[in-house]
Length: 190
Image 1 (tube, rainbow, N blue to C red):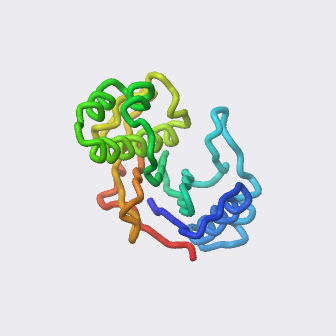
Image 2 (cartoon, rainbow, N blue to C red):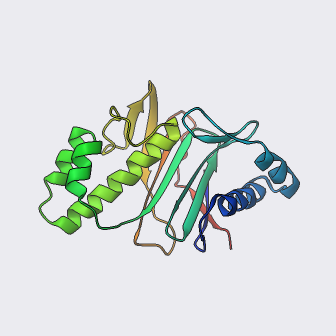
Image 3 (tube, one colour):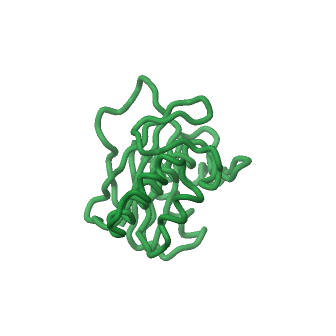
């Protein structure tokens, strides 16, 4: 799995598509093929983007940061800059009971906020891998490293982007015998 990222993202679908094309060009080593692949970008019934004849990928962005994970198996990536919100109320409304109980049981609000966003990125990464939505009511707890969703197994890992200590981020990969032994490779798109 390779994660390509850019920390000068100004937003918008056109810029995201341009960065995805650059990442695919780096990944394949073939700019012409990347342009052709991007022209075939489609979305599934729940909005998950895919390109027929190309590996799996997942895009995420927050603030001025954009990233994509690309690899040979189902994957999901989420990045999030923390913000002020009622983490306890949101976790009670959206998270599995086990995860909400964990957050609500933390007395220090700063620690509860950290755990909320750590679990949020894990939850979002899982939903991107399965092609779902964070608002689906029956998502499993994402506290553990291995979860079952839709009859398939997934590995969820907290990750750290180089030089971005305040960025919450997680990746989710379909679990299989071909499991990577190391974490993802990070490549900056300047």
